[in-house]
Length: 187
Length: 322
Image (cartoon, rainbow over all chains, first blue to last red):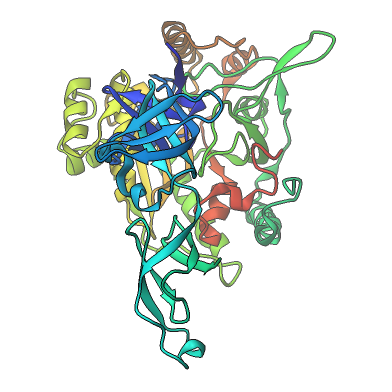
């Protein structure tokens, strides 16, 4: 059983506490000059997404969580699960809605995502930072408005809705930043 | 990598000015500046401090000082009067927004002062320094002074000498503080001060806490008028601990008892057992004069003067870049 001591604590470290996998968001060292040292730690539960604060006596050890980020290709959705594959090994994983969260709106078949696995179970999916998607629905642009920098909503092939400039038309493909959900450019 | 670059450009001239003003303060009060070795044969056994070991290729070993206290007390025992030092000190395992493994400590000793009088001089120093440069932050002129026992009674409804670990843990829990790991009584007292009480200290004022439980006396003498307490004080600016001082213990017999207890704690916790400093005990036998001493973190003072919340902003080459 791998463990981490508080003096190894740093952002991004994965711990197992009360049966749940957590990641360290922030670690602060607190110590009176002539007294006991503590680590005040902000953690995020990787299963529920909730953040919590915990204080450790410095020198304590905590079990490490067997959490791994793996690059996988998105294959298809069968109505209940989203299926991913590790390109090198062809190993496949089925991800449920709870672990997927809001990532489904950015999933396009063949795109490579980061899937976080805990003891081999998918915990979360991070889509590529930028995706290119076709606009399936949006109002026609109004001639002459291009210079004013106005925007309009556009529905993409996955159902995601982004704000695009008025000159962008239905049927065009656009590049979107999935971290902010913002339009980047026409492709 | 651009990591080779110094990181505290804006603070650098302020540090130089602060050092000059500190020297001016003590020159006006006729306190003598001294220098003592950074590298010593032994280390203090205080379980709360870990010393950096040093070793030469020929096998000779020593420790980097955690404070200049021991050699300065040898100067006092030898008959030197009021003295101060600006020392580089080293502490193992201490790193964070308010800690750096190596830092600058201002330490001074005043003959015939008790700890209250020395605490007043610390306050006077801070108020004089902050007025030196327009733009430096100044704490509110009114200082909050409170005895450790009174602070616990008033804020937490606890007697810090009588409360058990379980009671301390319960009060901490009621304030939203739980701690992973086994703590003894003094560990819980430290947790309550650092994580519950200090965060509530008035942010722009100095707080002086005096008369600490004797189990946390370190090298302070026992209080005559407050049984179970020791003549120790700390000065905070807001929630930031700046200085720690004692009406100094002069009795070598008590010193030996405390050192043996520290060693026993280190053994029980499986902590390292450094070689004990061999010189302070005979110096105390020869006679340490009645005096008070205090150590003040200069980097933290500079943080407050400049209104910075991270010690790395006042250090050109902080830990990890040094």
